[in-house]
Length: 114
Image (cartoon, rainbow, N blue to C red):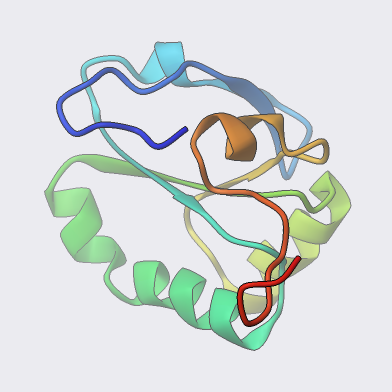
């Protein structure tokens, strides 16, 4: 299921890299960027995360919260965050329920085949 522009985002609660629960409902009224990525510390995912980091001042000036979600563990997120000095929240979705709800996860396909 893809999210439609202008519609309310599906609510979720996930643990961050430090084991704290983060609920989307608690961010109501704020600008929130939720981005999904397949795995910590891979070339593409690192480039994406560092892009947010490198534009952090602009993001803060826009009063925006960034939440990165992947199926990695909290411990993996800690290492990834610390290695690249990521100033935003990484959330663990090990069973991919939130990723699936947002249409950000599905079976791998190669050349149109599963």
